[in-house]
Amino acid sequence: MTLNMEPENQELLIEGARTFGIRLNEIQGEAFDLYLRELLKWNQKINLTAIRSEKGIVLKHFLDSLSVTPHLPKTASLLDIGSGAGFPGIPLKIALPSLGITLIDSVQKKIDFQRHITRRLGLKGVEVIHGRVQDKDILHKMTGRFDAVISRAFSDLETFGQLAFPFLRKGGTLLAMKGEVDQEEMGLLLKGEKTRYRLRRIASFFLPQSSIKRSILLFEKG
Image (cartoon, rainbow, N blue to C red; front, side, top):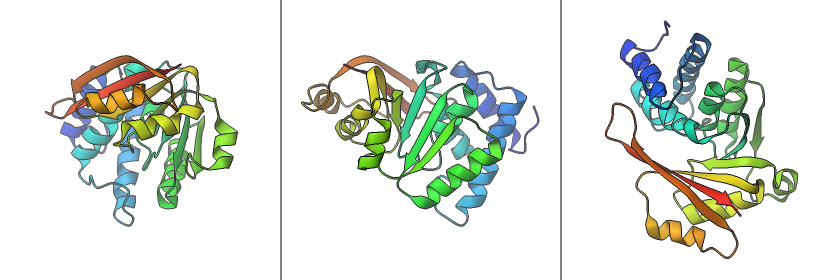
């Protein structure tokens, strides 16, 4: 596989993905390469991400997004709240083409980029929505529709759980991407009066070839 990115970053992407059980084929590798180029180009004009190095994007955006892959059924419908420049939803779609993805963000320039990159990558089964999950029209349209809800936009686990709750079907999975696990914060979500979740699993790991610790908390909607 020959990509435009630097050889060490190409190796980081391919080998890093493999640690999460993903063997990227040539088409998928080229998709990530194009995603990287377009993100760097757009980021020169509008602020899509504070991470501006090729390696940083591969590690902290692409591989961090792909770390969720082992915890997703391949045919799930996934809602990505506050999806920004498309993370983690678009990398997950590249790796798992059968995954149905809905991306929602309140910032128009980020939505413009998401629509641009999904067109350039030729991705099917991706819905991009401009708005907030609190909006009545969005709530009405998408209540109970998703097998899983994910976000990298919330530092507050309790708020994320409350906002995601209406969109999950019964038995659906809330995936919270975190650094260190805060037991007190997790307790607030599990004891919340407005939501009913059961902790299913905590997966803790380091991002490939780094000392960056990450955790994925999986909750089931009761």
